[in-house]
Image 1 (cartoon, rainbow over the protein chains, first blue to last red):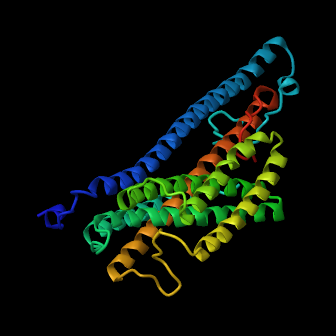
Image 2: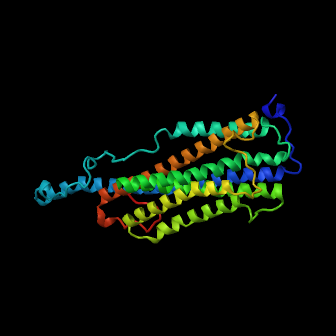
Image 3: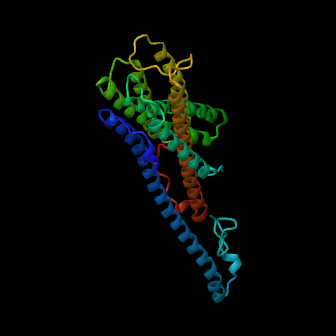
Length: 96
Length: 243
């Protein structure tokens, strides 16, 4: 036997629609709030993907630059730009 | 930087359990009111929403005091989120109360009832909080002015409550009184579980929003450090505090 089966019947005749309305308002408010937060989370996730892509691109540039420098006969260490983030410049490292 | 997401999962489970328990108590345990009948079930959601929203406004004011005392802008963020959440809960309290009034009194709104009008005044006052913040461009000034607003408005809430309590003429029911209230045992238990559920919901959503805002701020700062200031477009004008 289910819980609803043994539960007493609710007197939904006259006041039922008002009580249901009040509780639906409560649930709707929570749902709207959670939906807005979900949209924001989705936006944040997209920004995170973009950030990871930028990081990968930067790592790629940093690994290819010394070879170009060597071909040109220059000193790679002297012309390389310092990494803006400490500890995040190594390939495979994630600042996140 | 603090992590607001810590413990959020456990808190969410506790909140969900309490809210479900409260709903079960409301519909299957609490007896029907002798005078109002089934309509009285609205009371278990309307009153906790109203109480929690008013307490949230006061909480926002206390956090604003902390902001002005310490100068730490994280308190401004906490105050902003508390007021924002309270406003949502307040709108919920207002709508559910209006539905109850329609069912019980036959009117959606009664203008000569001090409890209703004073609650509306409080809500309208706080409805100006976000546009007020948005109107100030400088983040430092925005934070300070908003904190002053939150303190003054937060102090107004209990004063307003007392004034309404002292009012002689009212038709709005007085259920909770200093003499212990007029609720019989099962109704009181249901009401307090509902109040706990709504309070936990407020705390959970507050933490949830704080975690989201904190993550966004950290990500922006990370992006700035990674790409340099020149490549990041300046943050858009916003009512939300920027740390």
